Length: 211
Image: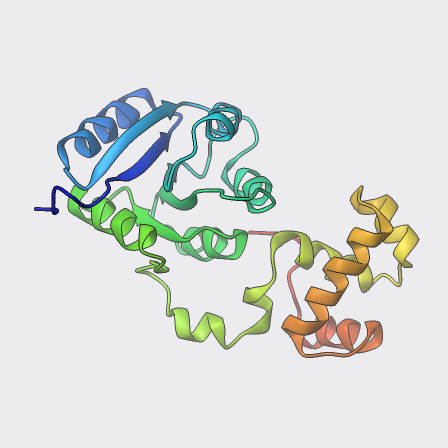
């Protein structure tokens, strides 16, 4: 049992299936490590609530309407004090990898037991990365896996020979933001300029679309 003096982990749940959401709510409310602060059935509902009611960990369905899990994670990565996110989904071959690439902190399979989901959330709250179906060391050795979704989109756009101004227009961000992302991109790929980044893109055969 958790020490009564230890602060509980504030958790928010988001799942499009009302039965799953209800079952998860009951499970978290029974565990003394957690304090359930809110539930929602949509990505927009999660986003709107978490802006008003901060929490430590969010458990989300990858296929949340309407934004979807990947887009929700991307939006929250830009926010200060955003919760760490655990994707609760089907343990298909690619989903854990997609969740990690998008920026989630953990993945728990729907086919797993309840304790696995609870323990994953507890570990994530402590700053751990939890992806049971992935060799995290292998992914960390691949620079592509360290890129955010936006950085991977930018790398693909770079391969088309776009200028900073053209990148700004295509991605809907300012030129200063383009420069910021390019700087991070170069650091993560250990390259010094656009030409080297483009060469890396083609040598890695990076997929042009997620999934």
